[in-house]
Length: 337
Image (cartoon, rainbow, N blue to C red; front, top):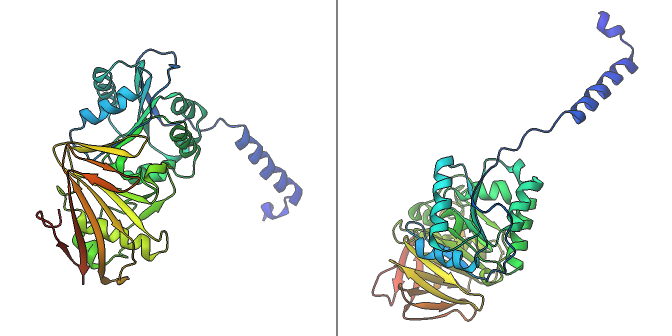
């Protein structure tokens, strides 16, 4: 009963005092980690543009492509949640590929890190940026619609090289499979294109050569053609684009993309360039997909492809269609792959 007799203005003053104290309290410390190998001062060299689209697995030649385009500057790796010693080891491996001022890694663990001015300065100073593998949902959760996204897009607009492997490749296109709930396998996606695991994001990184494109990785190795066709169907069905393209890269392979749109495929597997210009016939929740007229150009290692005119050399053209959730190929000696 005594508490009820406390004057209202006293209670209000108590609330205000608590608020003031909370504002004066130091902010929670950032949880991101930074590991650097090489020279401490920032490099001032001018890098060369280029994009490395890596399908996962062994990627030293593709990393060397990025490393060389750093032009002896600072090479920055961005990743989420990894062992400290492993991060330091990778820095040294990058420095062994070509001469660099430094190789460094930032390890993110939460979204709140993405407005730290010191972290943003590290990104701004990098001559080359590489997104490591892992879980791309972390990258979307931690970076999209944050100052980190802005810094990454400034890097791209400045003509600096950038690339990613596996999950790092998944975020490079205008559209991306964000894996916000979990990964999705081809049979499940084809059976229900609106299943809750089919999560697609857009408008994160702005790479003009990858506008209107979605990417996929570990491609034939993990039988991902079916799910990629579902992603294309969803983008068209949901009105995100009137036509959509895809670049899918096999494990241990990479697509090295120059600023003029010319791409070279390297490594031990092919890359696939898909295009769909008509909406799917049936793309609804809990109903198997029906979708026709998907064109594919399969390019083996050593071949090339131009993403501007969407034509390749040293490869094979064929068509895909889906009828009642069953994926079929027309005109290919390799089946759907």
